[in-house]
Image (tube, rainbow, N blue to C red):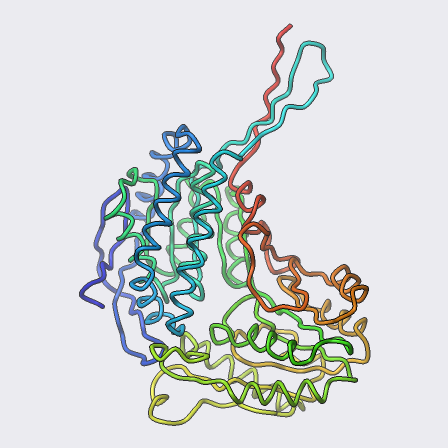
Length: 480
């Protein structure tokens, strides 16, 4: 893999090598699979300048022609699902089917986004004056800096660049230095198979210093980022110097509420899926479960049994769950569990790294369930981002909502009930940007994925996920 992958920046249609200085590890084996360079400030300026130079021509390109390029990018990914998936599996630790599935999911996004080539519309509104019209036109933001996380590098990459491009923007991408290789491969394939306008898409590699250079540059017209709340706040503060608009999809602490009348078996299956997907490293994961006391014992017993049936193993063998992505993520998961147990929680299953030859190296953690959890414990309040499920018993759905809304986060939430009135009232009362009723995670591209409170602002997907990459110009036409 190291020999077949370019480990270079991509700027103005050209690959630019740098001094390798950041190792990329396979989280299942701890093997270094590549070493990437970090862009210096001058290289970041060069990427932004290339994007700026390409922007006017791309904005003038008719929407249907932009849509054709979006479809072409989708076709490139469709032809290379397995190749990209293999790299993603190696650098991020997803099971093979999940890695391929991440790439495959972007194909429908390309199809959806291309449809906006004919649908980015303004308005004509009446004037207060005779013989005058007011036109509200939508124009691109300009140069968009897209900062991509390590947990879903390809899905989020496409989630950002495709809407930005269809709206007439040019883009500079900075992938996570933890998982940059699949993004590099996507750029390599696009460069090789498509006649991409120079400067339209650019790629700069490196860590936080590269991201900071992008965010603070006056050449950047918009920043779109997915990542932690801590980093999101830093980006918002840095972007404020130039009043650069930001779109931030940040951390979450999704509650799952199980009412007394819920289908317990279905709730167990869906919540467990929503907890251990990508080893719990999903911002929309069900991070805490509030179960009505009437079904708490049944739910806990079945949830523990289902958890203990999960298969861990090398991602190539397509297990239920792979490793966490880094040692630091593994350490945070373990310390969160230890702190909960020290505070009085009961370890119902898990709570340790697995044993055996398959787990002698890598960042593995056994899916864990905690009982006797007090709603004030840190494990209920702070994001864990690992396969840990704290179960809190409640005496009513209202109490569950109260506990759920205490969090500073407000991204995703789950409700399980067979009663329509309970479902509607609970959805209304939850202070979260999206809620799943009687199902597990997974957004639709035509919906809208947005966090409330400290889970972000701006949102992705759907009509509003495209239009956020535009700005409105008001034109007053006096034809008297």
